[in-house]
Image 1: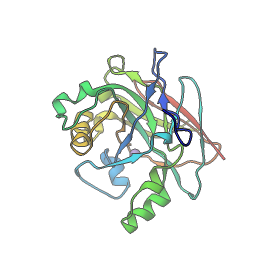
Image 2: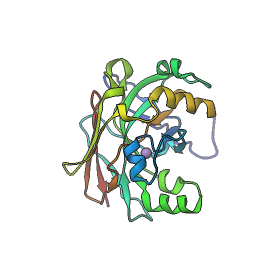
Image 3: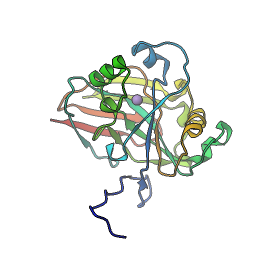
Image 4: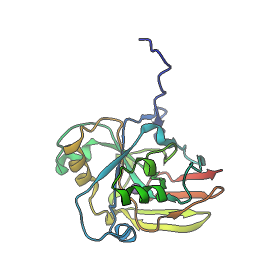
Length: 232
Ligand code: MN
């Protein structure tokens, strides 16, 4: 096969204990999936899960023990962190029932749903798509994927983020409004899930702005932590 332009490289994420990497297809994100975060964004109560996407090349894959680099993006004055548990889909499918969902998961990682909050807010106000607030370059830093069998009890794990050594977000994955299996049921009713898809499952409360020079370290108990530095 030859192409009229150079095809883009496959985006991939390291896997704990394996030399092979996990190739990324789509990056799905769940909106407002922790009650206390929904409240801080001005919403209350359980609503049906909703989704948005980031392009695969928004992923910044960070190796274990390394600090990745995220450039402070254009157009914003309010660049926010959202620490999230990420599920990596190993087996695709459509109309997957929650009872069957967990076997579609290859593994888990720690991710950041970096957000141009001011631009997202303006789009919300105008009823326009969130892409400019959510789906830009380097908006999805992700640490190494731990295969599900080695990941421990992720559903009840502590999730946290520190900025420059200070706590910003701390909660437990058990506070997800829609759990992993329910997310997969809802997602796969709307899209055909593919091997290589990543699902960012939502962030707990405490989202706030970062500036150039900040170092973000986030974790989910049982998984490799994620470290990134914001560059100018
Ligand atoms: Mn998010």
